[in-house]
Image 1 (cartoon, rainbow, N blue to C red):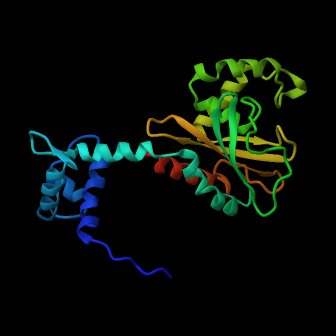
Image 2 (cartoon, one colour):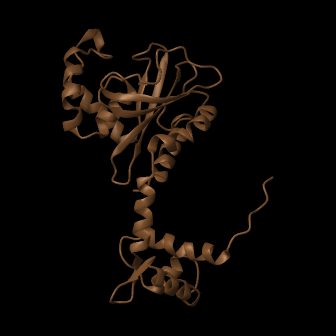
Image 3 (cartoon, helix red, strand yellow):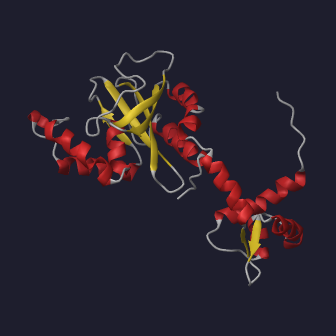
Length: 259
């Protein structure tokens, strides 16, 4: 067991105040900030004086506190160093182990959603999916995820080309119409997940979750897939829950705050 490392308690206490300021959309009075951080105003005041001196916080004319220029500078510096794929790569092995399924990291490339990382479970899937694979926008869980969250002007031409030649999952081979696609995209936005069951690869189910940047733009899709016989494809099932948690954690690591 790793020994507990010695720290500076005053920094840990003071950080609780900064964290509470970061959660607020407007300045806070000292008493309200202290209460939110679980301490008295008398205890919080010396910390705020020091934070003011170094620029971690600012004070309004009314005496309320808000984050200052140093906090902004540090935040922007961290964001510039954030790589969504790098952050995802740290977590997908654990997701593959927890779910017992294959996990892929997919980004938007020049030709559409493109696989950039693939993590296999102990029993790998024998499917034609590898780094560099470009996913169909209309025919795959990952493609429809990006279709649901990317700006329409970005995907419109690629999607129109696919719809013109696609008959995905349609009964009696009838066309896969834009109206039907839009209905599915609305379901994706509702559940925060895209899924396919036995298509486009027979016998393989998949769920895909979005990772968002601080501005709320999708930066990658996190895909979990496995044999239909053992894959829980329910929106609140044994695969979906850890998948959503993993996607939310990656979003958090690259600066996305909770909605």
